[in-house]
Each structure stands twice: as structure tokens, then as C-alpha cells.
Image (cartoon, rainbow, N blue to C red):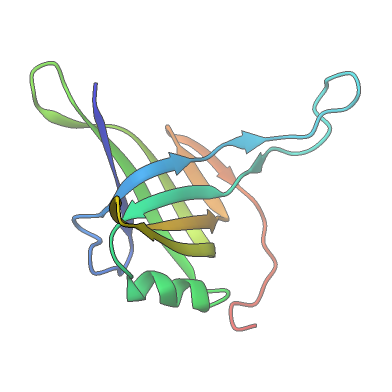
Amino acid sequence: MSLVARLHLDQHPLSQRGIRVLSYNFGFSQEIDSNGLPGSRVRAGLINLTVYGKSDPDLVNWMLGRMMTKNGKIVFTGISDSGIPQETNSLAFENGILVSYGESFNDQSDMVISLSISCQKITLSNAKWETKWDFDKGA
């Protein structure tokens, strides 16, 4: 099954249609002791995305907003055997802070934007994860 992914951000001009995702990387982890037993709480890694497109002022402002948070969802859609598009998986996040933004271009391909998002809450395959943050959004 071929997949297509789109990033949907609250209050983004493309929130309904979504921003086309070219690559996605995310995982959970926890430290282990010398015996291989868990030695810490489960931690969520950064959501790393590469999206297609030109400069996006909303994404740049999110990055420059330092503690600006956004809610969003990455939706993976595949084509079923019957040829009908259907959502196959999704990752939803709350209070996401954009901690890395970069643009890349070469004359062999289109411009791409690399994003890294740190989140307070994540829902993946109906499993929920949350961490406590103690910060002042105005700081």
C-alpha cells in the first residue's frame, strides 16, 4: 500500500488540506540500566518532518515565537485494495513547540522545509503519552 502523509496544524491556512509530508521520523524511548531494565520514564522524541514547499510565514513565525505552541495531526492515507483512499495511521500532538526550522534547495529538486517539533501530549495509534511542562508561554 502506498502512503501519503499530511501535516494539519490548527489555525494554519492549509489546516483543512494539510501540508504535504515528504519524510517523517518519531519514536519513544527510555533509558536502561546495566542489566537492561528500564531506568527512566518513557520519553517522546522529537517529531521530525520534511515538508514540501516554499517558505511558509506561518511556520517561520511559529519557530520565531520561541514558546508558541500549536496543536496538530499528521495523517497517513493509503489506497485500499478496492482503490479507495483511507486513513491508515495518525499522530496527534498538543502544545507542540517548533524547535528547529530549516529550508533546503538544490537545482535537482524542489524546495523542502525541515521541522522538529517538541510536544507536551502525543496520541499515536490511540495510545496517549503526556509529560508535565512548567513554563510561562510569555517568557
